[in-house]
Amino acid sequence: MNEKKHSIDIDFFRQLDRFTFMVKKRVSTAYAGNRRSIHSGRGIDTVGYRPYYPGDEIRSIDWNVYARTEKLYVRQYEEEKSLTTHILLDSSKSMDYRGNNNTSKFEYGAMIAAGFAYLVTKDNDKFAISTFSENVDIAKPKRGREYLIRTIDRLSETELGGQTSIRESMIQYTPAISSRSLVVIISDFLDNPESIESAIYRFSYHDLILVQVLDNTEIDLPVYGNSKLIDLETESELKTYISKNFKNEYKKQLENHTNSIREICDHTGADFYTFDTDTPIFDAFFYTISRRRW
Image 1 (spheres, rainbow, N blue to C red):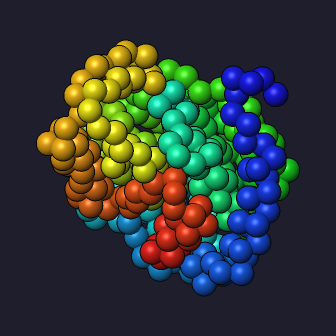
Image 2 (cartoon, rainbow, N blue to C red):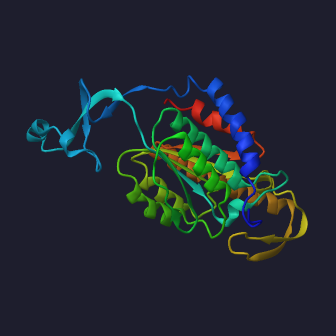
């Protein structure tokens, strides 16, 4: 493997083997296979109606309701729930950062992405893990264990680079989603708030999950005195004196940034989770799925 690429293949597979074994034992009640759901499309019993959304099948529109209300509604049936899962993983240069442990933010995020993909594969639903920085490398949704293994292979060979541009990447990815889906965005979200807000609202119609991955040294900033800070994405340098007040102000701004993302998610009904790479990967992933009603 090229030394410039992330060496996550062997350790990643080892962790994934242990990880998926624990998932089988501990999340059966959090994510049940063959689950029943209210879903639009073909079925046996009509159980209600909901507004028509772009991407819904035209044949599911109830024209009798339209004649009475002049609004488009689709029939809902009780049927097997089958959602395509779109996972977008930040591969910008800032995700290459690793502090005091041996796991970069990208490697940590890739394991969370693989965890979601594993659960989807378990129910034989379609998924795609696409990577993004300034542009998005779009993967086509497919199903099956072989596709999961090939996807993990691809992630292990991903070379990180570029700056985070969540808004632009999500605009590019939008045409890849043909119907209402589960969308998972995994990033450090070190982008301007307007860009993040735009991405959240763009996908707010879908079942949306945001997972923020940070390194503990980014949160606590364990340096003092004269220091040189380097932006991994732009390679620009900042020489400054880091005092206690500087650290407090830095931490306050980072908390404000994270809280602003959480507020937008709360407003739109999206789920938002934030973890540092010191958090055991299974604990982080299980926390995200155990708090959801699948």
